[in-house]
Image 1 (tube, rainbow, N blue to C red):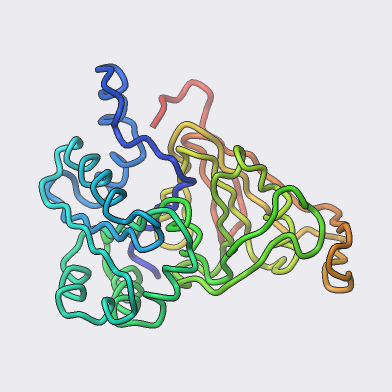
Image 2 (cartoon, rainbow, N blue to C red):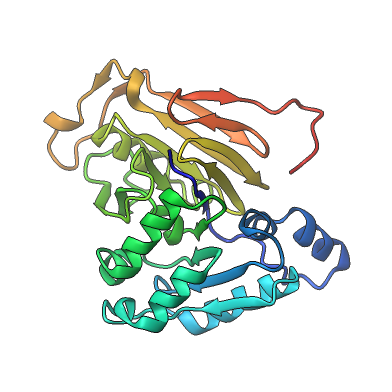
Length: 285
């Protein structure tokens, strides 16, 4: 059984940059990054941020440094990997071996697989995630999408439900049962996730809105966190799926796909494909 924890995030999560005291308190007590820190062991945890996906890695790294410092964490490191060679450097390997949590930033998910996939760092991440209780791998936007084995690399929301609207690539394979998409509501990605699930109907599609994430324990038990919604696509119930026989650019037909809309505190069991909805009177987590 997998012992570690994954926290995919839909992008644009609160980083505590608001100056209003009320928002700062909410960030510290309820924000997604506060959940990340709590799962990693609290303010004494060692957090390693990897901004490889970003076009502006230095600025992004500094934003996360400030955010985790605001939460009271004093042991935050930026691991700026820009090549496969960087992933093989001893200082990089030592940071990954000693971290309680590794956090991947947003940007271009293909950069992560191209510069980290198949390297010593990748192998250590997989081994620690599978075998160490309390070890956390978090990622936002591109950093969330790369957790899958079958990874969405791009695709047009404007051409939703047309074959070829989504392009796939190999991710880091941390949770091969899922296909993860992000910025899901704001960027209208329902169609491209539908096509991804049509390509791989045995997998579960997860669409995460901005400032929304999932805490995934033991590779199976998912709990929604944050202010938005998580959309779950279950293609195992499909009675009609013409993806394989269509030509590129042709509108698709999918019948009887199961879709769940979940929000803060709701739970999803990957193996059983079962939803547990939080009672309406329960507090925000």
